Amino acid sequence: MTTAQTPQLDVQPSPLALLLLGRGADPRSERGVECPGDLPEPSDPDLVARARAAKEKLGDKVFVLGHHYQRDEVIQFADVTGDSFKLARDAAARPDAEYIVFCGVHFMAESADILTSDDQKVVLPDLAAGCSMADMATAEQVAECWDVLTEAGVAEQVVPVSYMNSSADIKAFTGKHGGTICTSSNAERALEWAFQQGEKVLFLPDQHLGRNTAVRDMGMSLEDCVLYNPHKPNGGLTAEQLRDAKMILWRGHCSVHGRFSLESVEDVRRRVPGVNVLVHPECRHEVVAAADYVGSTEYIIKALEAAPAGSKWAIGTELNLVRRLANRFAPEGKEIVFLDKTVCFCSTMNRIDLPHLVWTLESLAEGTLVNRIEVDRETEAFAKLALERMLALP
Image (cartoon, rainbow, N blue to C red; front, top):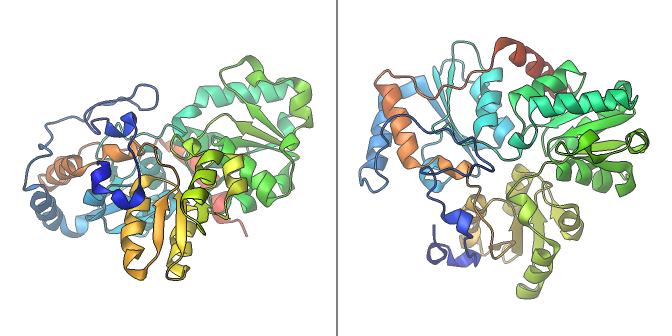
């Protein structure tokens, strides 16, 4: 994707955005798992026709899920679109579909496998489509953190709350230790529930969503929050700091949302007079504090649907979605720009491109199961327990 193709967003792709997506790996943020088999060439003029033919051949046996941040070339083949949890629930609501092709990232496919039946097979078109945020909290690191909390004498007071953007292992840890899962839409309700169960919350793995919810939405202070760094002894915290804190935030973040800055907000207000700044709660606290509106991906979409014609909006979320929304609402006279001039696409989400989708659908149509995502029974049981607690929230 080049700037010339998206002039209305005034965006200069960063070097990372120009990574040969699906053909390389960033060892700092991606799982680095190669896609087996021979992929079609991206230049193949028949890719769209091939995908359509394979999907038609599979019929009701396949159900394709497309996350909002996926490329347009992939979204066009999705049976449903949405955020990660909505898509996982949509998959569970289609028990007759033998194959669930999840065009998203690894943790999303895991959640779909947890919520679907044993007879259904969840497939991720590229196994290297991980999530840098989810990878910032490993099971070993979180177990060590719990040991630190135990040694500080506070573990019995702590209730873990894990963001949906986490691995199945972290969801299982959460379920095993009496906690719940949250989405960006219900994080406040999840925290309210958690504080009814205990005195402190260990929030995993996104520090920004945890901090923004606690301070902006629930009236806590920044001093009520401490940051646990898994790469430092004892998380870089003293026992006294852990005893005094209400929110123990994991040092994790979204590589895309975390790039937006206060300068981004100030710059867009200068460039676009009268603009409404609307950002995702995974953004930094100072960005959220300076924005006009804050909400989940679904909130962003609904806000723009309800916006009056002629209104101006700067959106702080993933570029593919912002481009799609800008094009969708342009006929209504709504001006939608990207919050920052220079930011990368979500490189891992973008790994799933049309060649990977074609390869997946054609393989399944030929009777060859590829790239299945399976969560082991014990992990699934505890992860489902945490998810069920979330679903039971008032």
